[in-house]
Image (cartoon, rainbow, N blue to C red):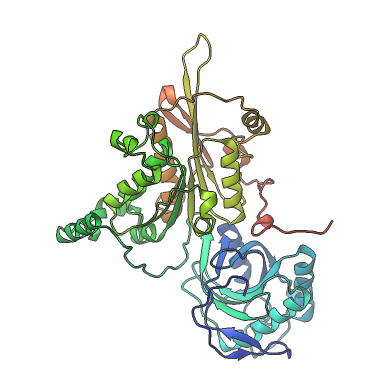
Length: 484
């Protein structure tokens, strides 16, 4: 079953290309993730007029991630079908010949990937299949599986904000799916059912009752941020966020997300509060040091105090111990001390097409000169420049860290962390809501502490439009193993 989570285990059989019938279930909680640039490219191609066909068709190449609670279909390339590969057929909107199918079959085998046969019924709304789609789609999928049955193969109908399709698992079973995430500016989050109110303690329940009594849970609470858009609050409440590292910067991020109204957060840190944390860790008190409380407890206490109905994963663990939860995130914030730790987290996010926002700062203390605070906020988007491209991570910094050249107490103060965290949260809000009317967040914004300035990195514009060579989209998904 390759880890598929089924909502309904009954359904009609669907014959495919004369082979034995494929057993079909109602729905699988598969998630299709497509970078926005790739989705726009596909829709522009599919909406081009054809000499005689009523609609165009194409193929996405995708990688898959099957571990965890559900499979991810991670699209990384789009392939247009040449005009001469269409056949004239009045009975349907568009039909392609055997050559087009053979090309896709060869691509699946050569690139060791899945193929998603795709067309559109229009850019808006959530699409649904026609009877012809349900008849022809499984035939194409079976042909693709005949070429490469070790990878998932599928077909779908897409729009700007929705998808409907079927995926053939490697066990030969055909499943329906309808869950889409668009990764880019602005993002489209997967559809989520309203979640049940989590179990809460007496104090949290009492707080919830008081908030309801005084109308604090009404929409009026967020009136002053309504400029973010008509549906902004619903988007923020649906968004799943991970914060990795809850020291100076991470504690600021958690606090701000709680004020804004986020309802789903995964807190990752296994450390306990110490007296040396109190100059920068938001929400921590001297009593927390005395009782040796975890940083996740501090962040959770503050978060639930503002959002008593929120789902907060506050187990005192690092993100590597919450892999399945983190991979479900829509955005990941990183506030990790080590360069290697940041490299690992970015690599994980890239593999699962998750936007990653990293913050970091350092205080330089040269001899005979005044100290200076340097820092940056980096927006690492799948396919776009990464922290290696932007020279935040280099061989030199990673090597120096391995050799412990940076040993010793690292200066930290609360206000630069707050500046960087606020910038990171602003980047996330722009991605989720698109409120800034086309102003795409910068890939890297630099802090100069002595001047209290944040400015776009000089390197970021030079890399605009370039494709990241360190984390190609084609390497998303589970690792591929090849016999040597």
